[in-house]
Image 1 (cartoon, rainbow, N blue to C red):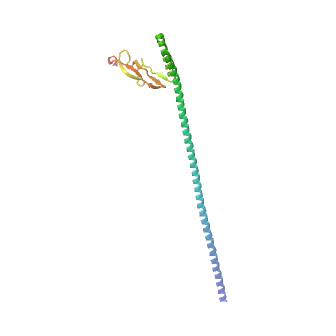
Image 2: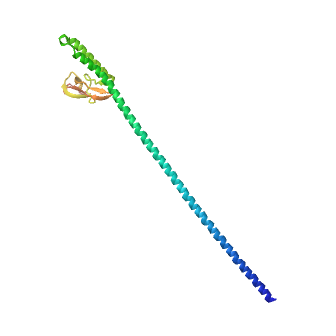
Image 3: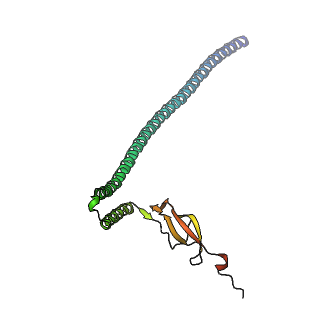
Amino acid sequence: MGKKKIEIMSEDNMAGEHMSEEDNSKAGDEVAEGNGMSDKVVNEKSLSIEEKLKKELEETKAQANQNWESFLRARADYENFKKRAEQQINSGTITGKRVIIDRVLEVLDNFERALNIDESKADVKNILIGVRMIYKQLRGALEDEGVKEIPTVGNIFDPRFHEAVETVTSDKHKDEEIVEECLKGYTFKDSVLRPAHVKVARVPADSLPKDINI
């Protein structure tokens, strides 16, 4: 009896060992399968990041191309605007010159009429009247364009508008008062076109007012 019991127990142990090997094999297969799934997940993640980076790169390239095209269009628009502006300026300048030239031609016509007068029948008084009319016409044309004469005689010398060509000692004028105009000066739209050449008074030192000490 005792021997049979031992043999039965041995068979049970063997069965248990056999089952343990099967369980271990299954466990191993499950671990291997789990590792395979983990590698698959890692690969899928790596592929997902790569695709994402690739997509971002393509979007960046597309945006860069769009920006470059926008820049080229803007530059072309600027060049066209610049050309139109230059054409308008040139056109405006030409138009302005034509207006002035037309006015000057009218004056030139009057001069030619004056020069064609028969000298044998010429009257000095009438000639002077005609010349004064031409002078007035020419000054009017210049004033209409913004040219103005600089005041001189009786005014105090101003280096911004006057150029002294001579000083005159005088006790009948204020010091630095303009006593004579040698060449007219003109301004053009508040800018000096040509300074007036003038003679300026210098009052003698003994004629200048002295300080009174109280």
